[in-house]
Amino acid sequence: MISQTAEYALRAIVYLAERGEAQTIQQIAEKTQIPAGYLSKVMQNLARQEIVSSQRGLGGGFSLIADPKEISVYEIVQTVDPIRRILRCPLSLAHHKDNLCELHTRLNETIEFTERTFRETTVADLLLRPTFLLENEETKANPLPMVSGA
Image 1: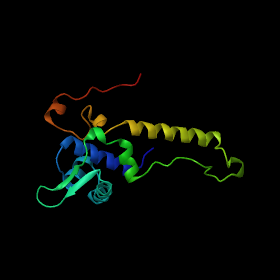
Image 2 (image 1 turned 90 degrees about the vertical axis):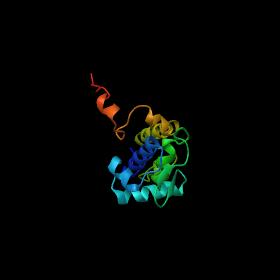
Image 3 (image 1 turned 180 degrees about the vertical axis):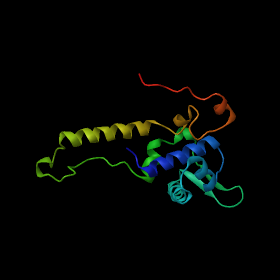
Image 4 (image 1 turned 120 degrees about the vertical axis):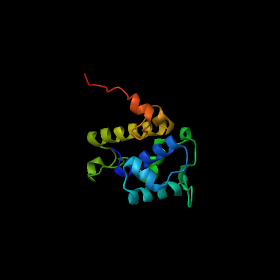
């Protein structure tokens, strides 16, 4: 439902929130498995929108500007690859001019639900349990239990 760019941005932001200190592009790229060149462009976009700050030089790198409790998933996604709602018939059919067909109505409702969920979810919410990015002795020694489908 979201683009690879949006997922990369979310991975990077979660990693920065976990670390709590400035990280270089190489550090972020290695831990999040994002190509460094692509990540650099994503991070520059996030910096322009003042979600992260960038500092050059020794001890520099990228860090979050706001508290993870104050940054919504929606804000990150909208910054790098905005969610597109269906407001008009994508097929430009004359008889759908004022109303979407059932298919596009349902698709738009799903997009609206996703948008609402992203608005209500903060970066801090994504840190409630160890993520795929956080590898330390505690998570290696006590992995999360696998959940099986019934």
